[in-house]
Length: 388
Image (tube, rainbow, N blue to C red; front, top):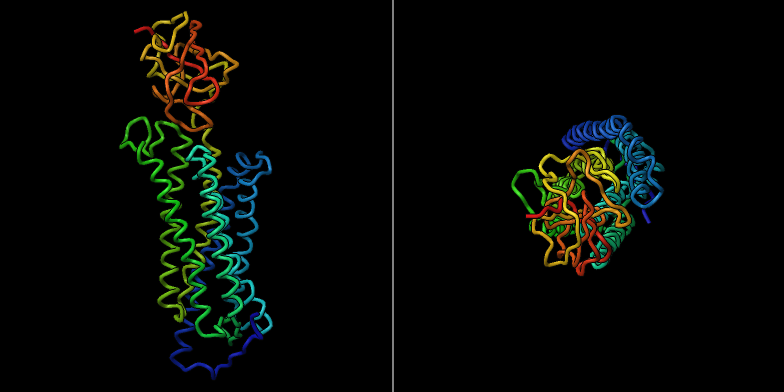
């Protein structure tokens, strides 16, 4: 275990080392204190969105992760940054600091990645096979990070320094701390890379380069647009910062500035979790809601001719479009318009996916009821059915 803590006096440093350490301590303080202010600022400015969109959620894993990142981990990080560079701390304090200084930073990353796992799973339409793939990958990452933290903490020894310096962390073995501390960043880098690949594999086949159907392969689904957009933005930032930390730890661990990016990296994770949850909950407000009794206006689709009758699968017109609604209800048009997705796609579980044409259909003036189809379970409502 760490300790007992060391105590360095002024004679421990040369004049050149003292000047360099004081200068880097001041720079580190500015970075950490400004990052702490950013976390508090983001919390206050987004509190109204949180109240409107998050507080009404049931206490399930997404909300627990949100609260954990937004309040618990955020408070731990702010306290850590305030006391980490507090000048002239005692050896007893540095002994305690050596135990827990790694935990809040890595916990912020792991908690954020847990939410990313859920979002990637949603992009894959909650596939059971993908669920086990993601759980396995995340479990391996957590195990790797936890092992590295444990070994690095055992090899860490705190050292009290004179003002204006704060606690120093010294490797007892001379090599384990460097090797395993860098491992706490290498594992997240590998995990993020796999998540990026899985996300791109899912959305690239549907990619569009503009137009009304969305830019991120959603086929016009705003939920999938936000899932893909936020995930890629998060991947870009956290992968870059994690990779930079891993390189610095591996190549320049003995340098005093090796931890300069730890604060911003943890802050990105906290803010990303908050924004991703709030953004995905804001999707219903982006467009009027669709219910099973009234469809919202869509000017590009109209009922030019209402049809009434029964059709076999081969007789269903190619001009028909499909949308998923409660199969126990008939959806009615509103003001001559109906809101439906592009032809050949259906909304199932909140995600667009292609499907085979149904085996039969029955129209009722302003909407069409179709039976079960082979490629998916359940029933759908066929809308916009027009005779060619």
